[in-house]
Length: 232
Image (cartoon, rainbow, N blue to C red; front, side, top):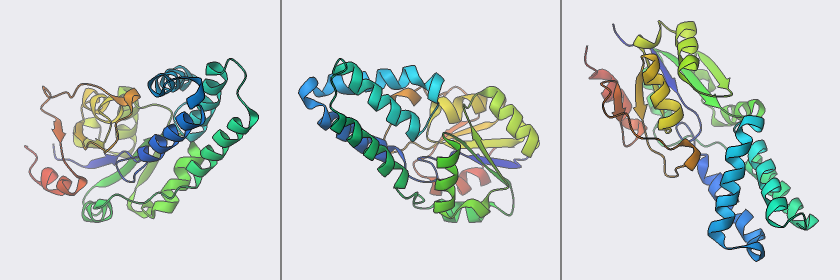
């Protein structure tokens, strides 16, 4: 059956995002460098993020709360109020950072929009993701926007059934093997992996190279050619 629906992840697929988190992590470590070695501070923050995903989900708000909680833990409750204020300032600055489309994204979406249903599927805070979509100027390319708390096989079944002709005639493109590619393939869709410059440890997974519906691209610019040459 021919492809009819193409879905895109947002953060680090349509626009850059993770580098802001990396820079803020470095800022966090610099603030607390008197309380432990750099590697230990990074590990403590990552452990807190893992623990808090079930409470706060994905996004800047949850990340900011995890930084505050980690600061309290590693200082045993003695973290200065000035450090807490700096962490809050860092979170606000992350919110204010513009969502600039990755090179090639606009042209690819324009090339595909008349022949396929185009859907954006992203995790994270509703307000923040809506803000970034508006800033990006890409909203008019999409037939549907789905901001979800998690991406799993059931998520893709629901979305591809609702907005398309089912997973078998659908494709998901993203920078996360764990969230974008593997569950989409498990649902029966194509899973296209485009690695980003920064790799968040929480999203790491082994590539499903054994699947006939897995592909890896260097850049999003290669997508139209890949779609044109998909096997029947």
